Every structure is written in structure tokens, then in C-alpha cells.
Length: 204
Length: 184
Image (cartoon, rainbow over all chains, first blue to last red; front, side, top):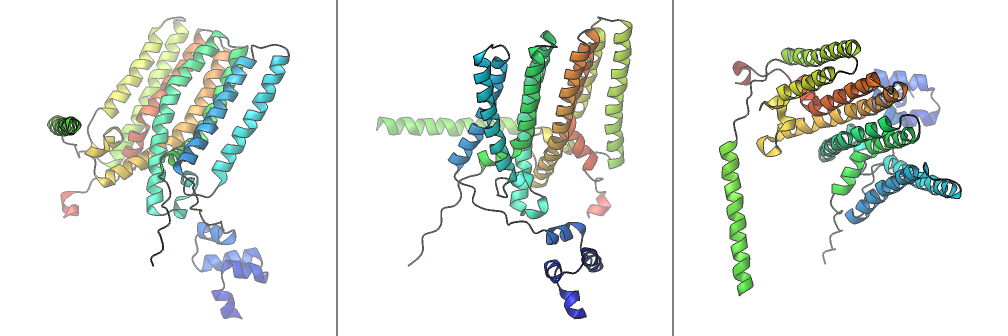
């Protein structure tokens, strides 16, 4: 029985109903690191290689940022509009924002090769770690240019109208920066990664 | 027939241009310096650079309070930012790999460069969002000269960070250079 306990894995011990503290102590005794223990305690699903064609991925990227731009435009124009147009605009805005948020959450939540920037290095092989680093590099360059252009522009808008519509526009821009920051590395990988290899024909 | 002749001519011209570019690049390319100093020295330099910039910003702020409406405090911050960028980014050393082309670097340095950009992105993204909110706050609470000055200082600071961060991270992280005895 003791031998069984000493050789049992975390999952096995959990199944047997051993108290968590005792499992943790046993794993520490075996020299398991905290990361390894956490992975063993709540095992994650394997990373999916179903990443779709490059064309589809690029369309998703364009759709996501395009929707956000539409939302931003709706807010920019909506703050000046009056009456029923405002209501209609706000409705469109709500739908657009919902779509954008859903796409972003789905993108960032999936465990695929394309989403490697959001996964820990220890879950990836060497090639994917390099792809991840390259994606961050491209993202940094894109984001720097975005900040260099959008920030002074927003300051100008806010300076001209500090308390009225300028503040609303500024908030839209902050939201845009937040969206860009969280999704950009994944979007870069999705944009760049080639089509998955077609299955090789069976030899006779 | 005519098309074949044209395509071979354009291919030759393209090859010629590529060869010329290679020669030009090789001619202009200066060697990368491997004199990068010790890690401790580099880290002190990083701290001194940003601390120096902050001191200048404080001086400029005091100056702006004294001479409300003057442009010289803004120029002082701008010049300090440009000087820091110039000092760190112009040199051709291993530490400055993020500013150099991949073609000039070996495989290890390209990977080190990518890792530096990755860390820089995470830091810069957070700083940019906080800075953006701060500038808006400064402008809305003080829609006058002081508010504009404060927001521009934050803007310059974030710009400085965006330009220098990958190089700074590399300087901070890279180990001490091996001595000739160690390497043999």
C-alpha cells in the first residue's frame, strides 16, 4: 500500500481521495516544482494544431479590427448626433462591441498554435517559442508606431475639447489601445503562419 | 521571343541590382563592437540614464512653474530625451542588437533580440496605457499650460521608453563578456 502511495501520480492520489495537503507534501518530497504540481493538479487540454487556413485567419484579423474601427467610428459620430439617430447608433455600437469582445475572448482563450503568445513557454516547443518571440517583436514595432501617431492625435482632440466629446473620444482610444495590446501578438502569428500542411497521400 | 529577351534582361538587371546592393552593404558596414562592458557597469548606466532624465524633467517642471507659459522647459525635456536616445541607439555594439538588422547578427543575437522585444512589449504596453490615462487626467483636470506640460512630459517619457527599451533590456540582461582565458 505504501509502495503504491509512493509511486502514484497526482491524478491517482486525487482519485483515491487523499487530502490535497498530503498530496502536495508528497510531491514536494519527490522534488516536484510548483509549476509541475499545478500542471499535474489541473491538467490542461493539449494544444490544438487545428489552426485553419491562412486566408481564414487573415479574414478573422481584419474582421476583428474592422469591427472595432466601426464601433469607434459610431461613438465618434454618435456623440454629435441627436434623437433617434443616437439610439440607432448606440444599438449598432452595442452589437459591434459584443461581436468584437466575443471574437477577442474566443481568440485569446483557445489553446492553439496560433495562440502561442498567450501560452507559457514550457507548454511550447522550441520552434513555437521562437515564433512567439518574433510575434512580440513585430507587435512591439506596430504598437510603437500606433502609439506615436494615435497618442499625440488624441491629446490634440482632448486639448481642444477637454470636458465634452473629447473625453468620450479619448476613452474610445484607450479601449482601442487595450484591445490592440492584448490581441496584437496573436494577430501577428495568425497573419503570418503558413497554411497547415496538407495530409500526405497514402502510398499504395 | 521578345518576351523571353525582356524577361532575361529584367532578370539580369535584378541580379545586378542585388549584387550591387550586397557590395554597397558590405562596403558601408562597419564591424560590430564587442566592447560591451561588464553587466554591473551596464546596469549602472541604465539606472543613471533614466535617473538623469528624471532629474532633468524635475528641473524643467520647476522651471515651468517659475516661468509659466515659457517654452524652454519643454525644449529641455525634448533635448534630454533625444540625447538619451542618441547615446543608446547610435552605437554599433552587441547590446544595441535590437536596432540592427538581422542580417548583421548571428543566430544567437537574433534570438536574444527577439526575447528583448518580447519583454519590452509587455513593459511598454502597460506603461503606454497608464501614461495615456495620466495624460488625459492631466489635461482634463488642468486645461492650461501646466496640464499641457505634464501631459507632454509623460508623452516624451513613454516615447523615450518605446525607443530605448529593447536595447536597455538587452544591456540589463546580457551576461559579463567572457575573458580570453575563459573562452579558451
